[in-house]
Length: 130
Length: 203
Image 1 (cartoon, rainbow over the protein chains, first blue to last red):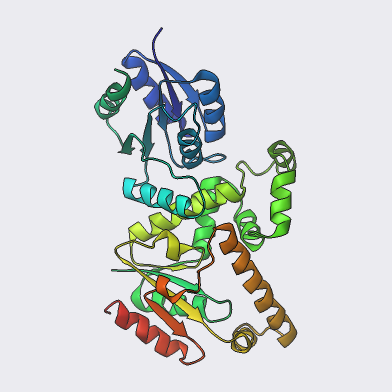
Image 2 (tube, one colour):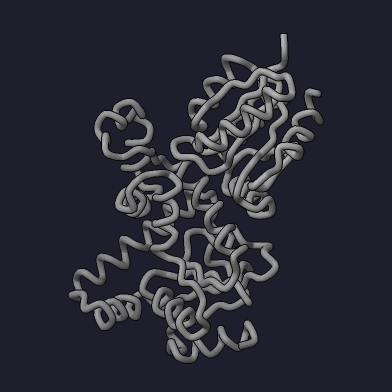
């Protein structure tokens, strides 16, 4: 059975792009359109990798990422953050959330800034589950 | 090229000074813009974010957060596609302030920005303080509030500020050590404050 990759993005076009790249690499995609749905699937499906957008309505990728990395049963799952937000901006926001009483979380395993080429995403996926 | 954060005791003239500096330097003035951005990203109305900020950290908002289920909110707020709670608000707030700072040339009003951008290389943090009576008078003069209303607004806003920072686990927001420049508006006027800020950032 092929490994499972959870793709979380509110933009259907980006989701389709990510899902296609996942399938082309021989893995099974699972789709969610927001962080809330993503967290539910994360717990149910226990995927081998998560490709996650940052800015989404309802539960954002920020919250999903922090929930995942502070959950004992989930925190081993690698995360590729894929966002239009610059990496340094994201990391600063994470530091602030920790300073404001949140739990400390590690940096995402890989952070890719949109737009991303299929080869770049493939390489990132295969770094963890290839 | 700078990022200015302005923290202030309510009625000390922080917004007025921020606008003056932003106008003079051609910087973005980020106050209600932050509300707009949070609303956009959370997919809720700006009014929701605004009312949320007004209630930030109060007992009422804590009680509501603990009692109300999201399903119930979904039913009541059918026209809102997104959702906002204290955590979602904070997640977006820190990200949007960090993003605005990275875009540079911006004056950011309050909302914990002095902490969020504490180690930002281009950020200058400013605090405005003033006596209670002067802050009341500022509201009467600038916004034509009645003395009674101005008095009550300053008391309420001081409480709100305390609640907000308590929510952020911060107590030292008036500690001069957090800031590049602390302006005692009891001693200087807005023109002088503007001059000092411009000197500090070298323009």
